Length: 327
Length: 286
Image (tube, rainbow over all chains, first blue to last red; front, side, top):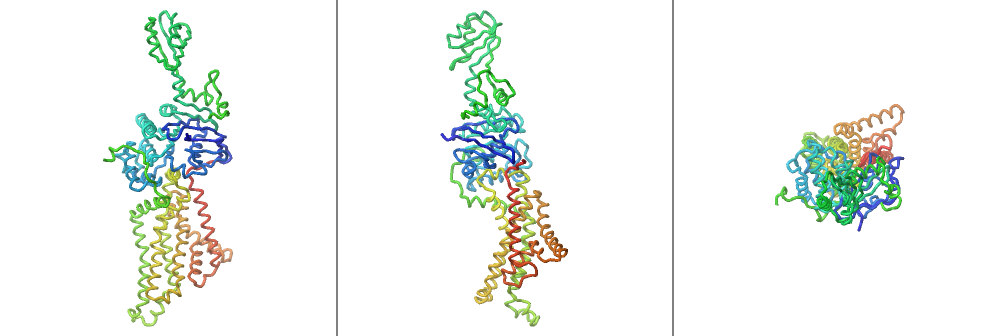
């Protein structure tokens, strides 16, 4: 299956500074309707990567492909399939949203009548239906973000690149934006690349995440798998005689380590849910004081990847992962 | 179904061709320009002189209407190269005024609002963008430059007959070709000014100012250095020299038509470089 993004030893220099230093990875699958999160501290190269994918920066080495097309040699094919929502203000203040979207739609190749229809349709979709004839300069920050999203999807692209889409949004608007992004994947089958500083946004919406640091990939994780894997770690605290708990757990294929004082660390096998623990506790006459489903949050993954959190023993170092070509 | 009930659906139908897309920006820009009263007024004012010229041509063929002026009228009402040269000079000034008001509104808002990434993330190159914007000015300036010029030429040919046309067809070519060169120069200048300044009003003033400043600077250089080649730095003067050569008229003192054409070519190249440097989707600070 064609990957959404394929980078082969991609190097990008801006002036004399090398921003992307030989990035290699294959992300997503075309037409799968999945979201890829792009994370990294400031100056990691996220925006440079996005702008290179859009053909705005010329690679100094290697290649970048989007949906199978070379970003530098086939920019027209790439741009015809991509919708881009920039981070910065990009809307022409004196123009109405409908007019702006019509222009953008027609520039993307929509016939004039279709562009007009789609402009109205997409503005209602993002919640700007009532404000669609107002000049964009009079919009609030949240409305502007929605208008930028609308122009990115008016032509129904295969891939939507969103640069900090929830910047400056209040909680309600943020939730709405994330809902729209989730719908773009699930209902419309669009692939999404989400670049954000907000880990919760990425965690909520993305299926795959790439963490950039100093122009290289520090970590690449499949969040779906991580979620599944992490579901197996449980911290349990009980009151009562827990002498038979280890044996009871092993009946279900689970392993438990007694840490003393009624505290247990339990690893559940695939397919075994938390309800089993409740049943065992009831059978053994134990009072459950605390049951924590411990999981590596994206924040922990991120901090480990950028080197602000010690790694767990046995984990692969990002450099090792990046160099073995799996990313 | 009402649009607000329909919900969003991805468009997967036919896409328009490249040429059709090239006309998108001009179409919307013309619509916007024609809604501006000032542009409409300037546009109408710019047509006064061609109407006067048409009257002149008519009278030159109906001297009997001017019997009161005696024989002097016959000498005055002559449609020749000088007539078309004066016509082109006056209309070129009208073109500058129109482009100073219409030109900066094309690029400056895109740059001031940071909208270029939205354009360039679509199948639109910088060249296509500049071409689209230039087409706007070609559309605005043509009805006040080469189109009335060609109408006057056709009118004169019709009234004077085939013999006059065969003898003077170069006037028609000069009017069309000369005005296209002028439109190219003026459009690039208007776009470069608006790309450089970004503030519409200042960009418009700069377009007007540059013609006067360059003209003044050229005269100053000529006077101080006691030369005459500096006239080539004045775009209006250089263009006049080229037009005179195209119309087959006696050249003005100073650099010849070829030297002026080279100078104009350099100006066009400089303006193109300014545009290509300024029209970038992202600014790189190294």
